[in-house]
Length: 202
Ligand code: GRF
Image 1: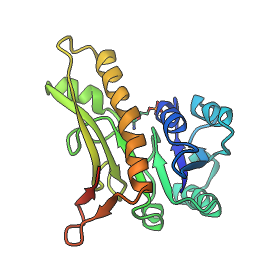
Image 2: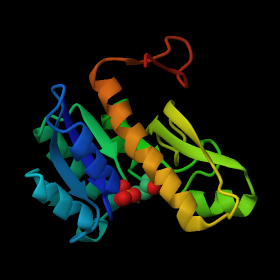
Image 3: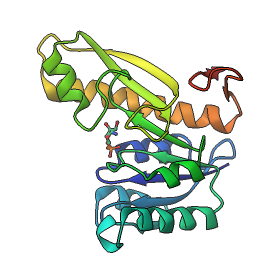
């Protein structure tokens, strides 16, 4: 089962995948693509001996062109699953359509609450007592695709942002590898009637 991971920065979720799923149970991370050059995530991939590439939007006339080049690159590597792990850009509709049900994302909130790039800060500002982590399939919207796994995280009494981030990332680093393992094992399937619903045999 061949997976590609798309990143933009630190790559701690990529590292969790390298440590927990890469080279196990027939799962191989065959490619890591970044939307930004010279980020720590690329160094993590190189250290693990995984092929890397940079697909920066600025290097292409339009985002659609970038996404087409990225899609061609992924297709040549025959990937079964594309994992967005801290990939900070919206993929074009054509890319989503091309890889429908083969793209997953990890989000640091309990969707549909707090979609977008500032989920942790927004949850704190809203004053929720429980937030969490969601792994979902990617559709054309921003963090709107069918949900695969979720886990709750309590907001610390201190409301300290770094403490909440620490708790959320610790859950992400478990939940994303688990979701990938379940998909690779064929334990994740779509509901026949309701396109929003995903069944997971954990
Ligand atoms: C994670 O919190 C992820 O949920 C969000 O971006 C962050 C990426 O962190 N989409 P990292 O690059 O995996 O360390």
